[in-house]
Image (cartoon, rainbow, N blue to C red):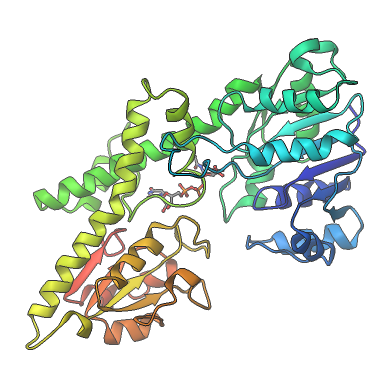
Length: 426
Ligand code: SAJ
């Protein structure tokens, strides 16, 4: 199959790097996004998100004329959809149902420019069955074309699910090197999708069905979530039994078939804390372990908060005439994981907000940002350097294992009241 022009719908953390990497292979790429500001930024050869190396690749792709952004889909040979799939909003959504409205809107927008022979790929993380639904939505608008759900291998349009699986912070390398799961609605759909990915993927392209590909993505993130939950539960048990959990894990991991992940202040980001719920929502009676892991990880921030409360009280008791407002608590790290500036769904961010409600003074140490996020703009919170917090803070709470913190391990260890939720000192 020949792909002269490829469209990428949704120019966020996944879509923009994908568009730029394909353009770097000298293919004509049209990036489509509803956000005019993002479109304008990209067309200037700049980027609106933070990801190492991406600025260079986008700049080169735009100036060499291979990548162009627009708000309106144009005719293409292939369309790759990389739009968000958050939870449905509303109090009644306690089943954590996925909101497919962005996929529906993308399908609606591209349907008018579809032509026979085109390939449409859904990359967004989706509950099982979403790709078939997307194909239905396209066929409702384009009754003049045939689709795999009714015409199988002879359909005019090819449809596949090929989930993204790149790690934020390493997106550009992983986009090329990672193996890809290619789930066509029919074998011919898979074949077409594989030919597209082979343009820029050096990893293997593994062919399966659309439903298995959807479940594979959810399974990968649930696997990680369950394993982090195991580590987080161990950390709570070890605290009670007066055992150093970090030493325990490193010893247990010397067994040839044991590989425990690391406890933390909780699981953040837009993926691992969300995707397992799509499995639970589809099979609530069956998905016990996956649900429990989510609950264990979601409860970890309040456990850390309780530890801070205890340290705050003890620190206050150690000073004569002290009230809570005299105490300075330093929160080391507010990003959702080490060495990135991404604060989305960050447990460290929510813990810091909760600490500030205790009435103490809060010092935020976050080397990856220049100003406090809106949520933390409060009278008793300030953004300070690590040095200042080491000099001034009464209680130190390590929430993220950022690299610069490791240089101060000696000084941090000397502090009387320190909560180390990520094992920086161990
Ligand atoms: N975390 C721990 N302990 C660990 C490892 C991670 O508490 O031992 C925490 C992190 O601090 C963070 C959260 O888990 O808060 C998630 O971080 P992560 O590095 O595990 O994953 P993400 O969310 O950045 O990216 C994941 C990746 N999935 C897997 O590794 C299976 C990535 O490959 C996916 O593409 C991405 O989700 C996604 O987009 O779905």
